[in-house]
Length: 92
Image 1: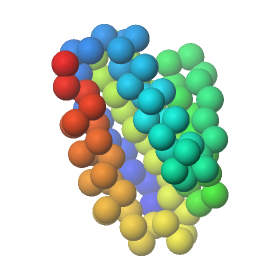
Image 2: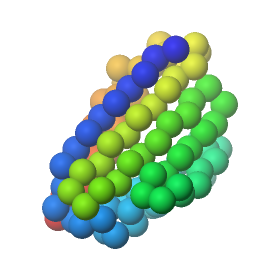
Image 3: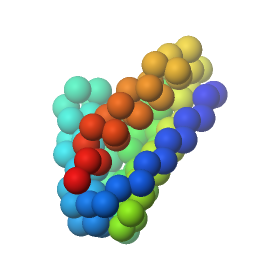
């Protein structure tokens, strides 16, 4: 099992960052059959072969992702995609 953690600082504030995380979760749900729910300021998500969290604070977002055996081979590609997505969407 591969574990990926990506952290990014932002200046959006907690609510705006939560809205961006929600939009991302909705897209993942549509494209990859991901199920998600909020637990406080943490978005928990799961699908076959992967699960994780997106923790949102006033100035930081942390994505933690656990990949099952089959998706582990794509770990590097998935991590780069997460980094690119966060860098693009957390701009003020």
